Image (cartoon, rainbow, N blue to C red; front, side, top):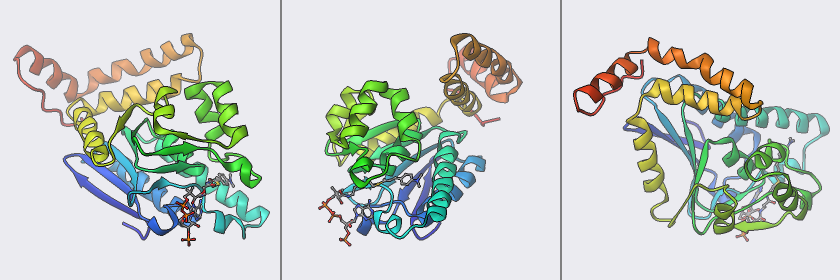
Length: 259
Ligand code: DAK
């Protein structure tokens, strides 16, 4: 638990909240480092099966990288910031547990890149998304140029990045960036319901599925299918598989242990 990141774990789901509300949860180096530490811990915590990430307050998920901090950065400090940012986004993307972004307001620049590092996004219908960096004289540098195009394709990515335009949550949902739109009041509840649904399934299988889906996405179909085949047998080395199959045969709910 740090100054800018609060973690609450209940029923196998950890909710990670960025608590820098006065600056609309903008990402400075300290926030990024705390997030990185949080995801490293949660990745190794056997009690945790899914993670929700959100922003404190009702106005912003994350309004971007910290502009005030960037205005004072030297070239070498910017390089260190880039390294910290990438390590953090990668720790989320490669986290062995599913990560849901619950986008509760402005989700801009580095904030949108953070959301895109998650496995999928639930959002308030009041949220606004965008990559406004070129309006400041830089471009998305925490993975946005690459991760957004993998979701919406090159043309929409280029329009969003070149125009620096903000889009509504509805538009982002229409483009497939947001999986589910919720009211602001029900966002965390809906994300929690989805997490609970995931938590009730075989944790090892979910984790392997995440790895295979993510790693296969940038490969040819043939290579992706090899990755899928390569990990599949690992499921047969788990108690979860025995439990899942037995529960089906005995017509009862499975009680998975994540082993
Ligand atoms: N950074 C720092 N402070 C921010 C901020 C930000 N990104 N966004 C908002 N704030 C602060 C405001 O300065 C204000 O602080 P006070 O004046 O009260 O002290 C407070 O939050 C409330 O904001 P506003 O008063 O502006 O609230 P409004 O409702 O009027 O406007 C807004 C909300 C979200 C439309 C507006 O705050 C806004 O336009 N914010 C900036 C959005 C933005 O441009 N975001 C992109 C930042 S650039 C890198 C890789 C990646 C990046 C950088 C480097 N490397 C590889 C090195 C990423 C860059 C970005 O994300």
